[in-house]
Length: 167
Image 1 (cartoon, rainbow, N blue to C red):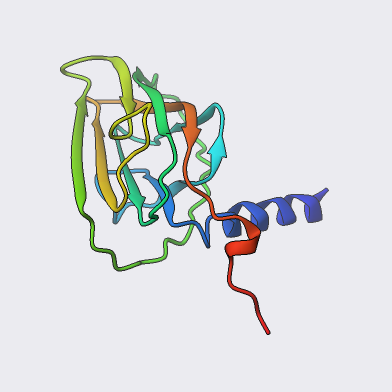
Image 2: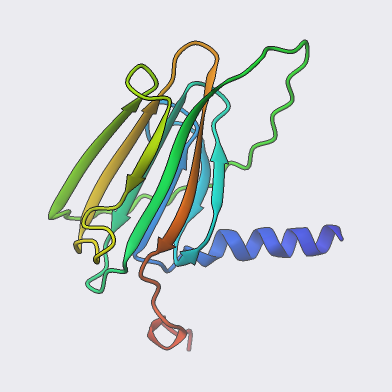
């Protein structure tokens, strides 16, 4: 069972390695916070919850063949304190890539304005623009945590034929 989990982890970690379009979800205020989710390709119903009242999400598109994009919901939930809180988080290493973004967008969601709502990629449900860089900032109050759920998710993923081969 343990080997299966390690293989599953390795597959998930490496699956975004060659993807030009990626979403990084950070557990905190900005991109220096730990990565708790790295999403690419096609997924359905992906749910992530912050360990504190802030969550930062960045969407980076470096492809010339954008996908349909993504749509999701967010909510701010108040956490009742307990004597012992155990948090299991998977912190992924983020590769730093240089890019020349032609489209940038920043979105701020605050629990002071709305306790829940939706978010999406630019132009959704149409294709998102190539070379986009978007930041989504979620800020709760006090002991709130941020929950995001991707309800539709379709980013460009090159086929195996397009990936470089080792000779």
